[in-house]
Length: 120
Image (cartoon, rainbow, N blue to C red; front, side, top):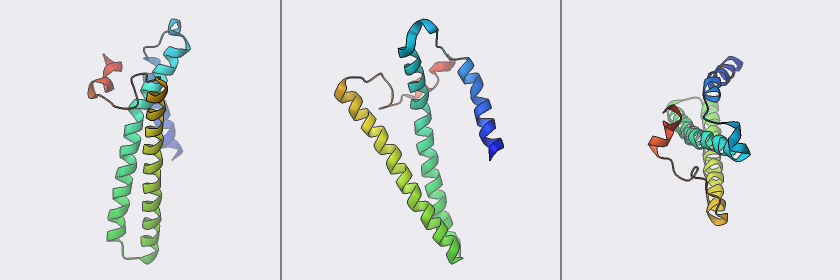
């Protein structure tokens, strides 16, 4: 597990090094850069959580052992809870941004062209 985590962190270094941030943009530019990264990563995390939930549903239907069924059921419940929390917080942040007029152009909807903008 440590090797996988360290591989993910090391693979993120080129993205960080090639960022289109310059110090003259100030702290606001840095926040917008981090926000755009979060805006790109969050849908991926939610998609992975949905795939995990579907995997546990299949595992629940396939296994015969009662202990494995209980474990799969527990994982499904935590999967539903995790997806609910992620989507709720994402929606709550979007509501706050629209209420206070601080929408910075990310977070509420993602255009497929925006995903490739850092590579242009």
